[in-house]
Length: 138
Image 1: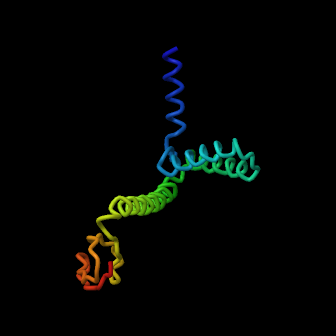
Image 2: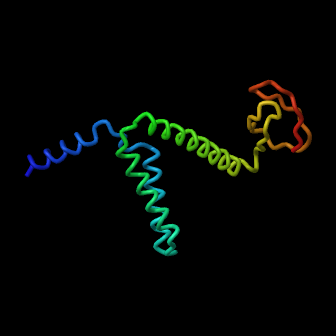
Image 3: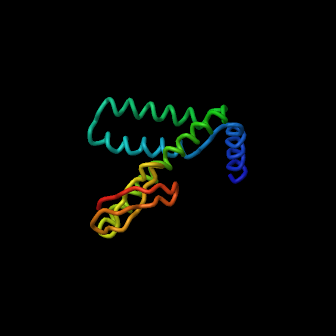
């Protein structure tokens, strides 16, 4: 039995050699598919069913693809977008937790978000990134 199991694993490993396999984008596609599946259990929508089939097709295609360079490029672009979304969500969480003590403003020159103390009045701020002076009213 053990010999048969290792033989099967070796066959799978040989089959997957030179193929893309699992990456971050495939994981996202899989969990998005699972979420749609759960939502579709309640809605019973044909559109969601077709979207689920498309997602499964894309998932299988990306997993078994031999064009690794193209799949890595897709994954790299996905990771860039994921990083931007995570950064934005983190900023929103910080804004919410610091809402009583801090105020967030963008530098008009470099567009960097600055965290400033919440003191009433008009203040002159020097951006630590581009050293541009600008006025902020809190």
